[in-house]
Picture 1: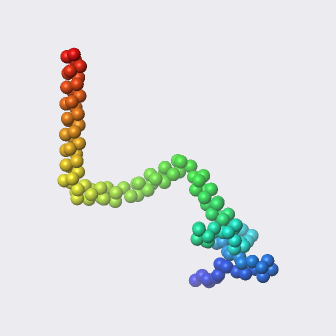
Picture 2: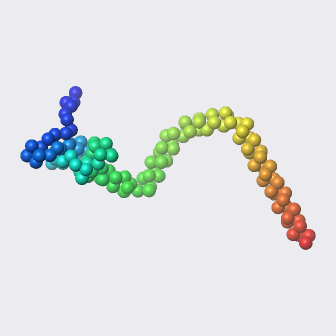
Picture 3: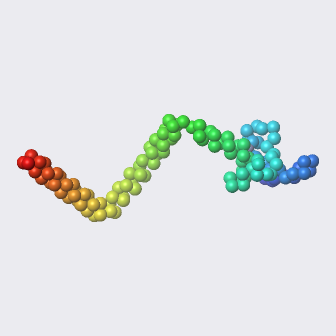
Length: 127
Ligand SMILES: [Zn+2]
């Protein structure tokens, strides 16, 4: 069982409100309490980590190499391949008529274009 403690405290000596950064505390910093100001805390990021910890996380994400990102994407694809295929089969089964009609129309258009190109070639050969 963990003891719930407030993450905000009042520092009487300095006369300021301070907030505890859990990330700094787990990283073994000498202090994890920082003055509650927008200089040290970003209110739009949930106030769970101080700005230094947020910037560090951002830097580490940016430093992740392209190869590492690709490996991660490949692993994600591999892990979700079966459900993607299942979804695809279900989608095709549900939309079979429409998909086949689109393919027939596309094939007919291409056939017409080929016939047109052949007549152009014949005209060029004759003339
Ligand atoms: Zn921190």
